Image 1 (tube, rainbow, N blue to C red):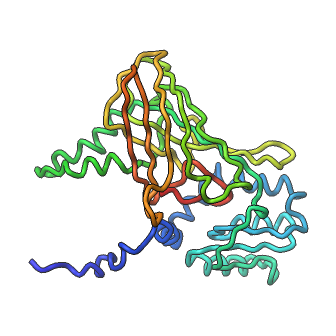
Image 2: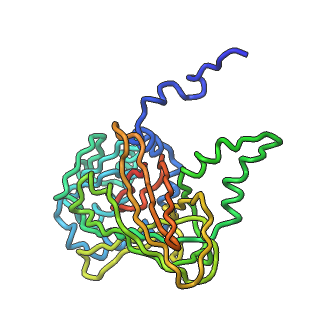
Image 3: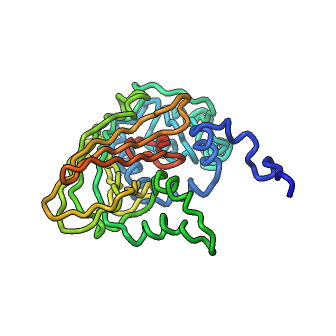
Length: 315
């Protein structure tokens, strides 16, 4: 059998792509924009923050980084912004231009650009709170991981290790939560620099019932701090689902825990290789004085630890 033409499968040059390339390519497709726009928690919160606090936008120059369809730029223009500079790195910028024209905004009021430029002084102030909890997830883990033991009669168990390392972005049922939710890190988005997304943070999880633990779950909350009334939203499993969902980090070892027992450890998030093609999450934790590790490689996933007016990269 001859070797297939990899370019036919869209794989030509794939090795040269970074996470940023895949990330921006994904935003050229309409599906992800539809999902974000239909995320009422996200979009309605942004709309309310802008419309209910017009004093922050009236006669101001607004910079919308990662504008997508331009919906937030349109909100700002309607709130009275003097000019809106909407920046979009994907080909969705062409559609955003048409949307601006269709909605009759004056020339120059909203400028759509492919050029990516960011400066912290232009950031609308919001604070992100990153959390970690632990869940029981035997059924789903069995379906996701043990599935590879027998695939239509073939042993594909060699894939299990890689499957364990890739975080799962999905909605977690709050009934699965076994421990408290621990605040890992607080980030002021308006003051962040690129390196701030890499960090090590300690955690302490206390079991709220006797159960098994199959995974850690990470999520974030956001608060807009410059509003007359504090506004924000949560992406946690106890809140209304958003398109960010939660990030599930499966553990190689199933933990047996009793009510009141603790899991103490630290989570490190950061790039372990250069160039920055993969972002890693490493957890070191103790339960009943036994030290354990969990390592994950993050590809094109929603960022759990930062959220601004536009989702950031989590790879």
